[in-house]
Amino acid sequence: MFGLDITIVAIIALAALSTAGLAYGLLFSRIEAQKKAESRVRRVKTAETDQSKAKAARDRMQEMSKRRKSVQDSLKELEKKQQEQTKRVAATLKARLSQAGLSIGTTQFYLLSAAFGLFSLVLAFLAGVPPLVCLGIAFIAAVGVPRWFVGHLVKRRLNKFLEEFPNSLDIMVRSIKSGLPLTDALRLIAAEGQEPVRSEFRRIVESQQLGLGVPEACARMFTSIPLQEVNFFAIVIAIQSQAGGNLSEALGNLSRVLRERRKMKAKIKALSMEAKASAAIIGALPFIVAFLVYLTSPEYIMILFQDPRGHLILGISAVWMSIGIFVMRNMINFEI
Image 1 (spheres, rainbow, N blue to C red):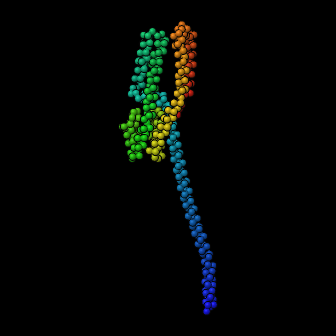
Image 2: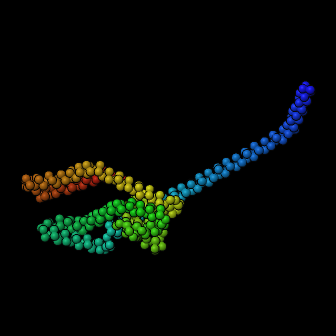
Image 3: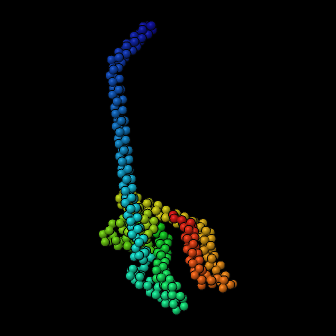
């Protein structure tokens, strides 16, 4: 009985195995075809995904190249406009008076210069100075001194602007981050800023009220404040208006760059003080020696002022000293 059960079980197992083999043989081609179809579907889906990713990457690259080209074109156009504007501003006395913060016109400036030259002429004549020297003093007083005074006022006003400009940019950054638009941030600086930044931003707001765009109004500020920092500010505003982007981050970076430039200028000024002191001593040495010689032996030094050959020597010496001072000034002045 036990042997019969083993035989029956073996027969059943062989029958099942044969049935499974027969079924696998019949269904093998269909299973393999289904596997191949599924593999092809996966490859197609993977290829489509890769193509979509590649297309998206190409679109991003094209968009980035378009934006980069737009920014480069904008920078070239702004640089060209700034160069033309710089040439025009540098040759205009009216612009220099505006940069100095003076409210007078060119006619009033010429009248004041002529009056100061006439006053110096009369004063030198009453002091008994020779006529030719009187004319030279009057010319210097009428032409050189007023322009030097205007240049001094321009330099002082630009330095004050550089001191306050980064603080104003920080206020603009905080205003924009708090949700205010750019125009309101400009109005805030125009109302509560420090001079001379306040007056310049007030001009921007007034230009907007007359219908001028914000980038154009900011670019016009370079006329009254001819600084590279103002040029940077105008470029940032122009690029943001054309290409978009995070304006608060751009202005924050600009403020940080301006502060670093100021630190670098102060460092260079400190390092060049020794050279400036040496140049000042060398430039003043001939005058000091001439004065000491005049105190000890006046007859010896007065020949230079009484004899025509002495006048020629003094003229040549003045020319050579001027050349030396000009060379030393260019050697110790650094542009950043």
